[in-house]
Image 1 (cartoon, helix red, strand yellow):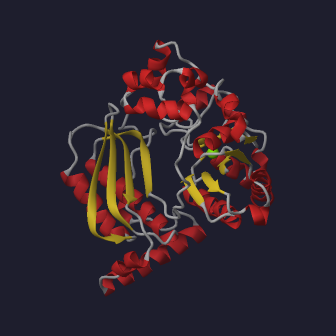
Image 2 (cartoon, rainbow, N blue to C red; image 1 turned 30 degrees about the horizontal axis):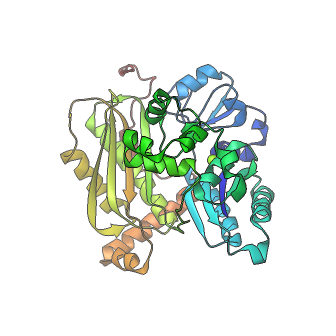
Length: 400
Ligand SMILES: [Mg+2]
C-alpha cells in the first residue's frame, strides 16, 4: 500500500503554532491587504470566507476583512518540512516528496517493524502532531493516484483508506476533475459528452476516449479503473529552488528590476547553502503588466551555491534575453534547478581559492541572517533601489 501524507493549511498552521494568540482567527500568509501579492496559504477560519491560496491578496481582504495577514517565511517552513520528512524516514526510506508539505510513502517493507499500513498511517499522523503540533491528513491506497485523492477527501485531520476491493465504489461517484490531468478544458469537453463522474468514464469503451483525447484518453480511462503503476521514487533532492516577487506597482525602471533580481538571487543561493545543494541551471521569470509571462534559462559551466556566479547569469539573462524593453513588469522570479549534492557536485564547487573564500563569506552571512533576521544584512544595491511602494507619490498604481 502507498500512503499520501499532506499537511493541512501548512504555512498558516505553522504561523498559528508560533502565534497562539491567532488561534480561532482567520489567518492569511502571503501578500498584504493593500498590495498585489497573492495568498500563499489560508487557515480554515479564512477559507470559510472563500479565501484560498493563489488568490490575489486584495480580493482575500475584501472577502475576509478581519483576516490577519502575515508575511511568508519560506525558509522556516522548509525547516519544518525537513522535520516532517525525518518523521517519514523513521517509518520508511521510500519517501517521495511532492512539495514542502506532502509526500508519498511506500510502506510495503515496513510492516514487520511498524504494523499494517493503517497502523503506520496513524502513527505518522500522531507523531507529527505530538512532535510538531501540526495536523496532517493521510490517504492509504494500493497506488499513488488513489492515495492522493484519499488524503484530500476528509481534510483537515483526514484519514481515508481505499482497499483493493473497494476501488470502484470509491472512485465512481467522484467528479472527473479528480482524475489527474483533467483541468477545466478537459472537464468541459467531457461534459459535452455527458460525462461528469469518474464512474461514467470507467464505463466508456476505451476507444471512445481515445477518439476524443488521443493518448490522454487512454491515460484517463486507466485512472478511472483505478490503474496507476507509477512507483514511489525516492528523491531526497529538491528539483528546483526559486523565489519570486509581485511588485506593489508595475516596474519600468530596469535598475529597480535588477536590484530586486539580486535580492531574489541572494535568497535562492542562501536556501541552496542551507540545504547543502548546488544548482546548474538558472531561470529568470518575468510577468509583464498585461500578464504575459516568460521564462528564460541558462546553464552554468559548473554547479554552484554561490550568489556571485548565479547573479552573473541572472544579469546576463536580464540584459540579453528580455523582450519588450519598455513594458512595465509586474512580477520577477529567480530559480535554480538541476540540483545535486553528490560528491561530484561538491568537487566542482571549489575550482579555486576565491570560490572557497566566497563560500565562507556567504555562509557567515547566512548564519547572521538566521540569528538576527533576514534584513540584518542586505546588499547595498537592494537597499538603494527599493521598489516604489503604493504610498510613493510619484508612482501611481498601474495595470489591471
Ligand atoms: Mg497541504
